[in-house]
Length: 235
Image 1 (cartoon, rainbow, N blue to C red):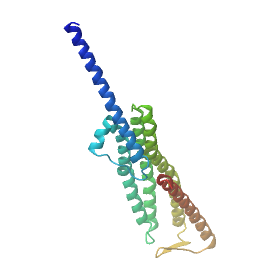
Image 2: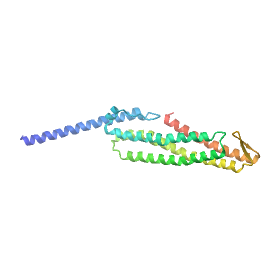
Image 3: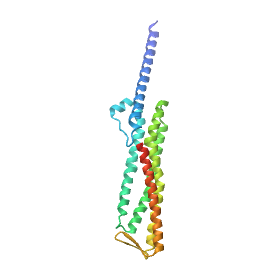
Image 4: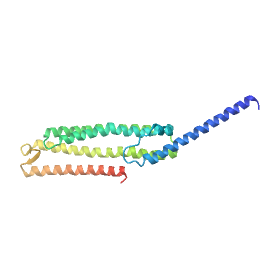
């Protein structure tokens, strides 16, 4: 064998060795990521685990696949969760017994309008996550497990929250209608020390009917929230 042929053979063997080494490393990274998803992510009922630098190194390129789940949950907390918590606190404050009809109406209107913004943000963030997921290249064994993780920590919470928004919006509409009714019947309805006093039976009957309707809707929304909690906690 001449030197030229031998050199080519050595280069070819080195190339094969490098390729096999690369394949072996990818397999190790894939298995480490699958194990992480199965043991640390899918069973988790609240929040998500943020991997350390050492863990990310073990996952190799698959660490970026997990970033899709991390980024969506971060957006849910910062762009939806915190604003919604603040909105609910403000609304509860405005609904105190001493609050005027005008203040209640303003708070209810703000809550309703803000829900539209929250719903749009939710749709946008979910679309971004789904777009990134569609671009991922994954072996079938990883894709199956990864999809389970995405379903639990991306799609399910998004779907559950989105389902509660229309019902909440409808309840707020009925609150506005009730407040409008109170304002339109000032001669028949008085609010003293946070208590509603009605002067005639027909007005009282209508007011009670509206309040019962709102209470029923509130119970339905609470039932949806309870079911979401049950499913997310696996109970």
